[in-house]
Length: 410
Image (tube, rainbow, N blue to C red; front, top):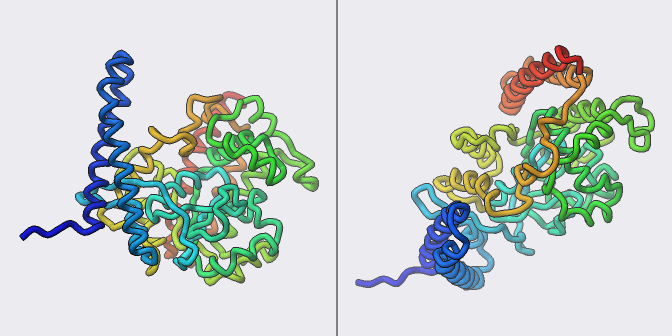
């Protein structure tokens, strides 16, 4: 006997059609480089038309489902579709419904450590938009996940209790996802962001430049000036290169969150309003961003497990590896997607070098962290284990660069 498809089954079927057409369009995009324009147009127009038609139909059907079950967060999870068999349809995240009360997540790192890529992955996993402590996203405070660089100066929460207190009620019980990245790359990436924001010193100035972020790599000449400048306007009591200051800030950021803010009585006040300020899970950016799917998928699994709690709708296990592959692959379609959007525009980050003194300072800071988090009670701490493994990777790479710098007299 014929059984009509449910609304969810219809949407899933439509989503599979969109997925198949999306793959066709992706292949056509590659083929475009090898065919005359008129031929490409004729071959791809019908595919594009079908893609648009299916997408519109999908949106309409999704709206019907959501309107008929607007109070169900499970219904919202259909925004990212599990197509079965390890396939998925990565769809744009939506705002958290006004009446939704879901478990919250703090996404934390030193600036330049790849939070943009990670929050793309979080949005693919949960279907909800990720906000930021400066609210440059303009998503407001009612979000499931918030990203911050606290206690670094680039966090709005450094203005004190008046800045972070409005977030406390919703995020008091938040899980903390900490992202670590090599200081050699994080500091350079942080500088590129500063340049894209024209070294803005106010919210308005920075917000006016949001459209320029992740569009180009900074020039080497500007990097050298910033790297070696003691910047007395920002650090009046310091008499060190900006790079040396940021190396210390990188390690202090790790110390703050690993210790739940207890090592900083002034800024640690924030943690007094949270159930647990220590990381629920520590992620290594280089692994999550790896071109090796097995490595990135394993790190994404760790992130998913750290965020997964009752009441937070997360895409089914079988589709999660597809989500991280889709997150990496979206660079082909979307501008300003992540760090890769800067490639080929400006001077390569690999050419933005550090002095031997600055590299040696990185080595000393990494060794300091290793001396703390590889002994005593930390030995059995899962996050410390991830941290120590990452630090050892960074130590090897930076020591090698330091040796080269010494031999060349840099």
